[in-house]
Length: 246
Image (cartoon, rainbow, N blue to C red; front, top):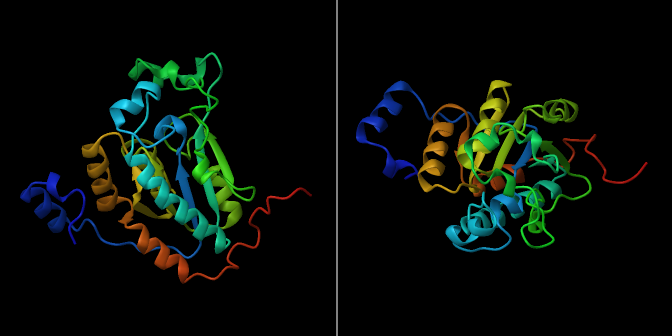
């Protein structure tokens, strides 16, 4: 099967991966959670439009390809909920004065534009309405690339009894990749829904998927994930949040 990254690899690259034993399939776990990484207006824009138009208003936008992935993520979240499986979102937060942006401000001249509303009622860190978290879902607030860094994610996965994560979101080369590497480092089985991820750079997107698939995760089409979820029973997580009030 031709992969999205194949056209960027030399014949030697392909030979090295094969000879060194990379790209083996680890397989799905038995108790998965779905992670939706940073699918906010700041990274997707507020509508499908060419990326160079979108970043005039949303400096971190990945443009119209974001919305193709959002449609995939929507199907995945609905399928996980129907099976009573955990759905976990992440998004960023910063102080109003942007003091805690830290290193982000060192590497991007438009960092201060990332937090205030962009001429409308939407905030850059709001998760897009099309896949808005439901009351039973978990939302992780973070300030660095990995959803694990400085957050409650690991303790939540432990409380739920998850043995694996399926990762979607953005950017493929940044927060998705950092989260995948950390999940792998904690010995979770990791899968990435290839068509449920997006990035502002075609090259970065493809090669990050390549590297993750080689060493840290199974990068698979969302249809593979849906087929897998269909085999699971709907009583794997009796301690899933109810979303109601006690």
